[in-house]
Length: 435
Image 1 (cartoon, one colour):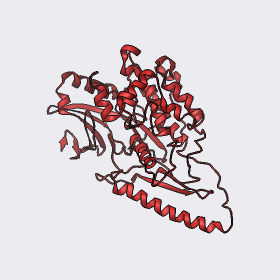
Image 2 (cartoon, rainbow, N blue to C red):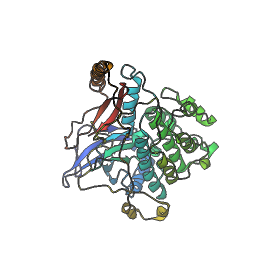
Image 3 (cartoon, helix red, strand yellow):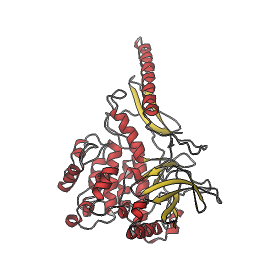
Image 4 (tube, rainbow, N blue to C red):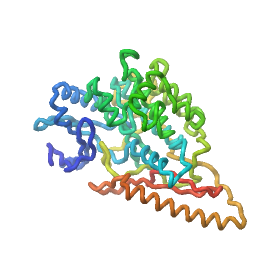
């Protein structure tokens, strides 16, 4: 299928509430893009189309290394399209679900509970996302639909983690106030991330950029625990909404002693019911979590003693997934409060300090010598074989991850498991994304 100068793949790489996303090749420039097609049924509304194109015109001005870039929007044969940057990687939702499936499989890890990701990785993901939000907020757009499905994880040339924030403001234009909760909440789980003022503006007032701050607080809690403050994955929407309106956070209280030091207060402030009591901008939130980067994890969580060559890589293409052109290398940015009135073009001039992902620094301890050592070694080998076989069954037989078949590149991304026999002879199992 060909549209203008783009050759589109026959099958979409992503399907959402607003339309389909296709991997596309620009025949003249030789680069790949992601093209989003507005659904035919939604295109019937002139107001929806007008707002869709208006939002695209706003987002095309957002030039930030942590925001998926929009290049163009157009109409072709009665259909409407947005041309976007094509990212190779996975969504944060995919990563969280991988851990959640592992946590739920008691045959592999009956003791796996508590903190999901190490604090360094959590802070890196959230801080880069907050960089993108702070930049966007100072240029007026409010995201309105912060959630792991809209956070893309990719890899820079130096194998460091890089975050891309996608779908700015689009969701707002594809649901009316009446059907926002049913369509968005049931299909995408957005209800867990919605601020009280988004749910009941008549009670809490019109929402602003602080609704995005609220959603980031929910997402940080999810990264650390695998669940939500106002209910778990099986909690009904009505119960979640009731808890939010009553300001009841059962899981935040439940995980208080499990969360690394400092995170309880930080998350609690981010998800305050009143916007005036939250962090007032994304930069303030970032400044609060950066000191928590190396906070101690719960003692119930096993962290591998050592591993090497860790980065973020992919097994399948995602919305709006794909390749970043080789000639496009995003520059790092750390916004400051002095940047509030800065022009869009000036953002690419500063650098952000990013720590390596997952840097366990526990020194190796000598294994006790004696007659039991051989038994431990044999047992450990058997356990490793069992764990590897179980992982193969989960990943390959249940198709948790779909391998990209459209195009093979030099940087294939895959999700692997790191198995570590700790000095205590206990088998430690942790999913990592590695090159």
